[in-house]
Length: 121
Image (cartoon, rainbow, N blue to C red):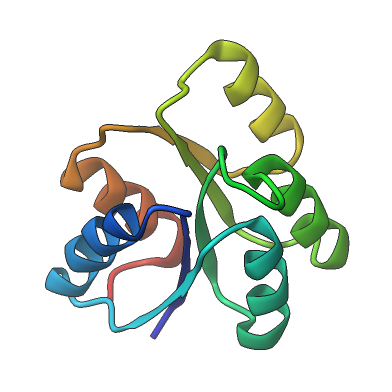
């Protein structure tokens, strides 16, 4: 079973993604509240996938992505943000993100992305 780390400073957004994934059969779901927490939890949990917001306090998602990829070059990280600007997408992909989901997102988009990276639950 794939371990998935959900990172967003908004508890509501973590819950929406968690509910979407758990209803589809993913059960090993973990949460982090910001980029610094994500880097720490990544080292502890060693998740198969990280779904991470970009705009967060303490350490933003792009900084956390770079820190995670520096420690684990094979890390699967999908960035998620309401700021779907081209520059953000390009920077996220250049920094090693596997994909980019723009908020508000559809459950099907999240599920298809997760399934394409870690497989079905």
